[in-house]
Image 1 (cartoon, each protein chain N blue to C red):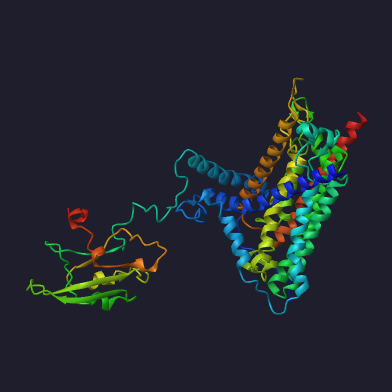
Image 2: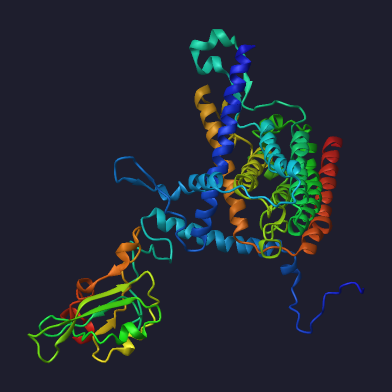
Length: 380
Length: 177
């Protein structure tokens, strides 16, 4: 029992650390990648001076994230005189917390056998194994959508409690946009759920180490390429980033629903957005990119299409899986940032039409086609 | 109130189905920006510069226009003394009032008895308009095309004094060669 608790604490600490690190580093990645894409150098002035020396550590501007965080903490927490104090104060947390909670069901590694990892503890653990996942829930995807839907409430609360017309408009836009794209998001994933026959993210990730058509890894993006595209589109819209950033639309609405927020409360909204990039990356990786595994790899090692197998030691498997998961998530995050700095913003009517008249029917078509193919395969 | 109707123009741009499908054109756009990103990253990785911008105080551009109004210099006579006669015309015409001159009497030079004992320019306020150069009757003050090395953490260093302004050596001036 106490072993379970120890492992759970370690896993939660790891996941929390990963998310916070991603949230901070992605602010730097976003600025640097945008700079490199547009022939600039990017943020590189913040430095940490080693005390009592003149050695200034710049590290390619990595400390700008720390400088930004410090600035947010030290700024005046200004709020409008007519705001609704309670709703105003809890809104950033309602946006921020569900984003973290979603990650609880995402597996970031295969099965961990602490006894094999550290032989000295083998007796204490007694052969118990743990999936590298905070909560192994059968309802994984449902939890993702349940918590993902909660952020809408935070955005609406923020806009409503600010008592500002720009905030109100931004909140209404955010509400309708996020609800619309939530539908598309869920529908695109139903195809994956149909194929795998489960909503448990761990099982979906494990099922993707198989092989289809004799040589391709059974990744979601191979089985459901269309759904992967729709999911990524809807997820970026759900995160309210360019080209779908109508709720913020700084040229029309100042900053949308967080116009009246300042200091760390505003920082929480920004931080939630950056963490959500990472969470979307993690979900996309788990559902479509084979999760934490390299192609043809599972918890025991590699099993290539030709029938050759390559068993790996347990410690190496765990390290490789953790590293591969982070690398894949970072790649998807980088792609989202590429999209954000490439595409122009939609008009609002285009945005909703895109959701309901374009993505929604396509998602439905994808679902029906998947169902028909599966039905035929079952009959055959 | 009538419902809003989006106006239709006779020359409204018509998109083909290929462009209206959005996904193809978006893919093309992402390929362009992604290509630029990869190209620049490759330049950074291989030790070259992957940016068009200048890393300013450490790095200055070599291609300032010859007519660029940059750092002020005081022209020197053959014996190395400033050509300035401390007439104060530049200080008078200066819109930002950044030039301070303190005149002095030099009995050793009867042709030019008046010379500047102090000649200081406050670059924290200078607008680089070049009116001082226009106003000078003696061609004593000019502006180089190079910009002064201004970025600093200390406002006091933004005052350039006579010694600094006379540091320009006309024998190395390509314009006079």
